[in-house]
Image 1 (tube, rainbow, N blue to C red):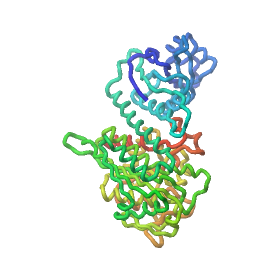
Image 2 (cartoon, helix red, strand yellow):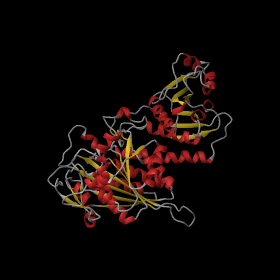
Image 3 (cartoon, one colour):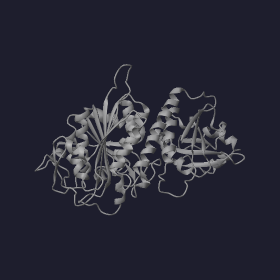
Image 4 (tube, rainbow, N blue to C red):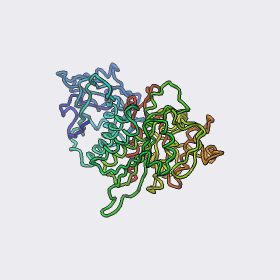
Length: 512
């Protein structure tokens, strides 16, 4: 979605639609809010008449259209709700509502009266970036397998800085341009994350990483099954051995621009993603209902892939190592079995009690490999790991479990800025005790219905050593499925939503 800037008002641009935001000051609003006064005059009092009849009220998510004289152009009013609940996320969600409700309405070029979106500490640049988030992400549709043409939606946004305002300063433009690069990565990742397992095999996903690196400052190494065997990565090999599509571990290195002339990047951060291209549960077979959604079990790795694209395009002064473990978990004559013992890259042994607890087994190799090989300052992993996290936090919040308060604080701050919600949960000594095995170092399933997300995190912590580490359980937030769709943010359409990319980019930008 293109974005441009003008110094006048939205009505001066000649765009198909002039957009105003309505923030309610309180229950005593009886006159048309002042922000709409000029637009009301342009419509010959149509807005004030409609306001008096309560045809629109400014409630959150409300989108109203009013024709200008001649009928070719329209004024659009979006409600942001009460002033006390106004926030960056409210603006972002308003963009999502607009993208959906204006599709097919003939508004292709939308001019935004930016001062109507700014209030309190929220400045114009932040409002513009958040609105662009919502408009861009809310307009997305996965259409690879659709024959019909999509309804035409907004293709260009003009940010009008208001009467008497000057053109956008360089810092304003830089923030919005930065956001567009992140959004491009999110949309690209959504297209990959939504692909079914017959296309998105481990080999295919590795090829996407190689293609992504062309023309970008990214080094890609693909470890095939032979190399994984040489390295002793018994976890990912065990999970993938039931499939005709062998596993792959993909390593992406972004060296980072020097923080100062002649210097080095300030930090090395590793981001690790679970990439189960399809999860049948293996021999511990899942129920048939909704199993088709298990093509989304690669969501953590796809988020890493998208983040690496954005980081490279942004040119951040931080070294980033992206690691993705891709495998297909299927039942078959070669599948790993409950009762098997496998050895991870760091030498720790894992007793397999449930082949459907495969994500942590794959991550055992990915986490231990990156910490030993690259010695990062911090490690963050993303995984659709446990249904228990969905039970605990629902579909709008991911679980955060960490060995580092400082890292957790950075991630929570990035979460607040991007609207991708995290909630920190504990890992206690009890959870560590619960994952100990009688015959191996650890077991991959506790097999009792308590603290499933936390024991999974305790298991993962065995493979990062002393490196500050955070685990994001994105099982509830990674995709919008048949359940929970009505609770998703308006800028998150059905299917894979690329949760975590905007959050990680914000975290890495601040880390740099």
